Length: 117
Image 1 (tube, rainbow, N blue to C red):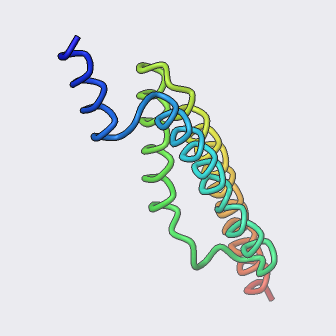
Image 2 (image 1 turned 30 degrees about the vertical axis):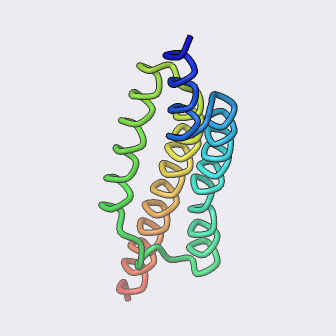
């Protein structure tokens, strides 16, 4: 009995109970989705400028691969709080890369047509 009381006290002192972890998990997952959607601002900026010159596609590729690894990890540990936000981030990251590549191809075509007399 005393051992059980000690464990409850220790668990509370070290970081709360199950409800604290659930709440923190929900807050972290929600913020993760917001972070995952933040590249949409970059997409809007590229579309407004009609240029992706200032965007590093290599950097975006590294980030997207990292998102895929986190998705795999979340699936293995069966944690939707990990899988959900990283899936959103992965999709938005691929969209950002697609827009950047598309705009670069358009710029190349414009430059080629501008050189032809």
